[in-house]
Length: 141
Image (tube, rainbow, N blue to C red; front, side, top):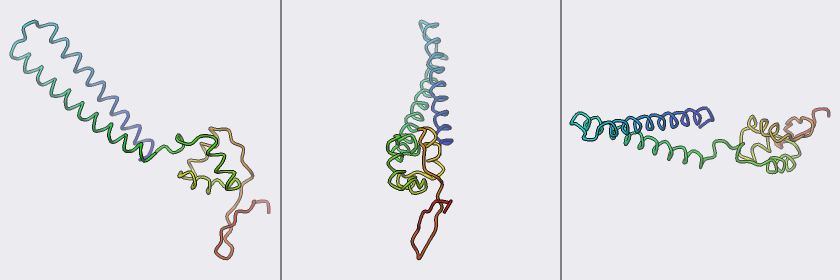
């Protein structure tokens, strides 16, 4: 799940909460206006209660899905600290691809983390395969 899907789910969650609040406000208004509710008001009240229950079920379902998605850590950049990113870069001698792999994120995700934390890293390196082994060498060599 990417951040756009997570944002969409969060937006739906907020919308559902907003709708539920509106329904609750309407219900409260009807109950306050009528001291002895008529049959039509009782039907409308039951209808609103059913809608509220439905929205609560949807919100609970979305919350459980969001929690299960968070358990998979879709936003890995947010779960890492500056120190963990630095440690990975130092361990792999500044090779961002290997550091990203160690942190469990895509190479394109580590760049914003590096910029966010203001990390200065060594000159770019390139991958060279020699006799089946991967070597990382500085580009100026």
